[in-house]
Length: 247
Length: 326
Image (cartoon, chains in turn blue, green):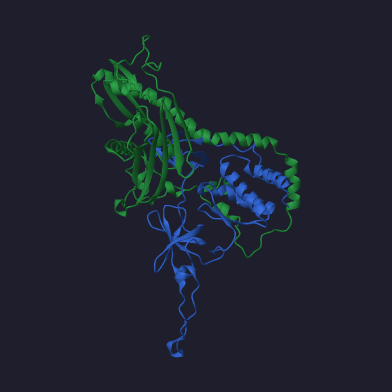
């Protein structure tokens, strides 16, 4: 984990030739042109087997199926909610994917009679501006993603704070096998939910804890391309806790 | 009483010692500096100071197209808004967009389109706002340089950086990077935009009279000047991150390792977070597309996706993955 035995990854720029080895293949963030592999992003070059990848340092969130994201209700039609998901797409949340079904006579034969469950006004359950933790059900590069808010960890957010960082920095906030996020939770006694679209829900024991947590996350975002980040953040939090008198 | 200083209209563009009025040689560019990330609200931004020019460029998108009918189902569209501030020139410029601004917006757009993978963003648009704060000749070239920097800063995939620089002729001599006066009283002006990957030209305008030999010399100057500007561009893009890395290294040296270790033992007590609230699971980190270095995944690297709807013919540049996919 120490900074010494981690190789420093090179920062590359668009159009830069990153490999001329014919056995290499262009991975993410790279294209092959004749025998040269060129980068298309400002990013960090990394080699994985025979693939040469460029991890971009800035960019937008692109929804992928299964991602857990934090969405905001921005508009309603009579049959669906339109959600802002911090992407070029508008997420679609239908009431059938958002609320549990009321139990009418499902599974019973008609002879047993029906009983009518009064129809709820499902479209009125979310207001404009509500934040909802959702999962991406479907969607592609050309279609708007369909969301669901039914499931473990999903649902509307009623308390806490939501902050926004660049979606490309999210993996660093989570850390390798969740190391960074468990560090933040343990040191600051906060609840954190990191969504893939760059939004982070946090709730702290006290406002001071929340404030330090937000500053730590912004520090991680700023220094996301550097090595030895976990140790540095740990030292920063310990030092700031002493200065601010946070327990 | 205010004395309005007239713009100089004599034809003299050279000093007695043979150098240009600002002391440059014929094949020398004006002072050039640039920085990126100057506008917080934009997806990417750049500030370019080229001679007396001072130009901001900001990128927004890819995002939805409004009005919707402009959207193309097979490719994204690029929209460029080049505007001059009212105070950027000697006489006040009307703030309304005029014919010249619309033309420059168009030529900048066409010079940038070849280096972008617009086919990867169907039904969406990328917007470039270019604001000229101070104009000193050659703004369309400097604007293209700024737009290219801002696009790279925004993380929009590009085949190459582009650089704009002009050649021209004044008082019978071929010049590189005309200033305001040389532009106005000179005999010819060739604004060029160079794609730096293969040194191809993506914008070429020509105004005035020049012989073929003079034009060849002009292009030699342009390629030389473009290389200088390109190096400044790369430095600006990298220094944004390198500065932070250097600060981080200094901070690393100060860390008291023993303090971290003792704290860890105290903190390894029972987990704090209540179970009823959303908690991130550790597996999340492994599934991430750009997880920093996951050795477990080394054996199965992400192959180029086959579902790219607009693949180019083989042998040409093909985005091996949908660029926004990362």
